[in-house]
Length: 238
Ligand code: BEZ
Image 1: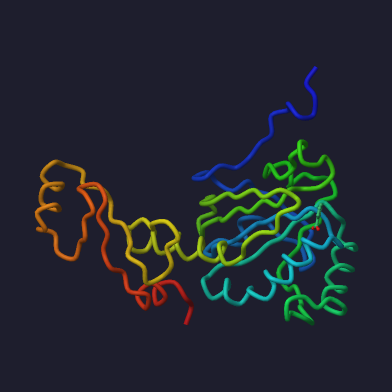
Image 2: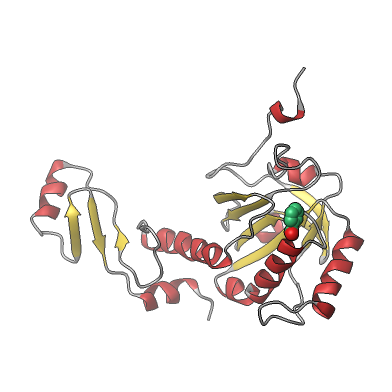
């Protein structure tokens, strides 16, 4: 007989359609991902309401929400707690918690109630090796067509880096808009990577400096400038 740890879990993968669901949230019902067509969305899970790491994460994410919205990205949270617990926790955060200079923080993005774990299981957020009763800290970055573009999983004890989540949203959009790839630790304004030479002729031309504006470390590794203003102009809502 299979034990809990050996059961195959479903898990949306990069490049696949985000699994559909309808859910009750702190902002009313949502039909996911249909309601988010045309926007990027970060769907993320957290282990439990009224826990310290989650509280620090929600305060940080809520404080950065406008910044994400400006990059055409909406936020949707989930835990396997119920709606009244969510409401009580969010009220406590707003009324009582002060952390790293953040206070009176109102969480206005939807927080899904998922007592049945239906959504958490669909998205592979339950990891029995970590906990049978709490979702891990999963992050799904989903594009305006409802395709999963990035997946991250963190354990219960490790709070996420929200600057990195923002960097991911901007880098994915820059890669799409300018048909480039982004190197390690890329930030808007840094050089970007162009697609590798697809023929010996192109490889030679690039190494001979015949393609203007490129800097080639070798035939397969060429970068070009992409000014910060150009990236931000293309991504940020005016
Ligand atoms: C927390 O958010 O602090 C937390 C939640 C579940 C397990 C451990 C820590």
